[in-house]
Image (cartoon, rainbow, N blue to C red):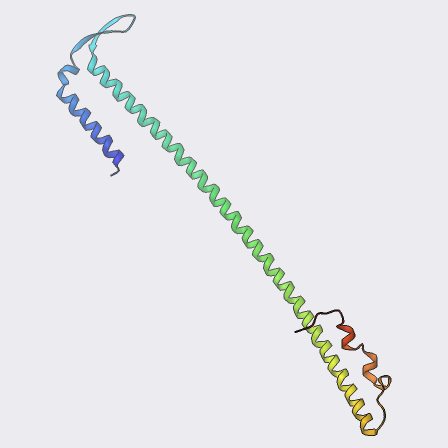
Length: 169
């Protein structure tokens, strides 16, 4: 039980006990002046009726206010859920874009790697052909000339192709 409810119940109990002890005074008739006329009525009962009416009005107002607060909380909860859903959709979209970018970059890396592998093979073949021709010339005792090496003359030397690149160290 909350403290607030306990205080309200205690106040109602005290008020009920006070009314029960002083009931004869509450129902004693007295003359009431209503500015225009005078009326004979029990003042205690009128005041008790006013107190009950004000209490009921307060309870009605608090119930209305609590209902409005609950409706506002429900509306805010729906809005938060909608915003959360939008944020999740945006996050999924960003993740999908990142995956597509990674796949695209992977494709480019594979393509570049294949190109480099092909170039290394070609350079290896060129080097092997050049060495074979030079070896044959040495065996035959002839001079080695770059113009007579068949495969090396057709390709640009590696040093010329890598002239603008930084060292691999």
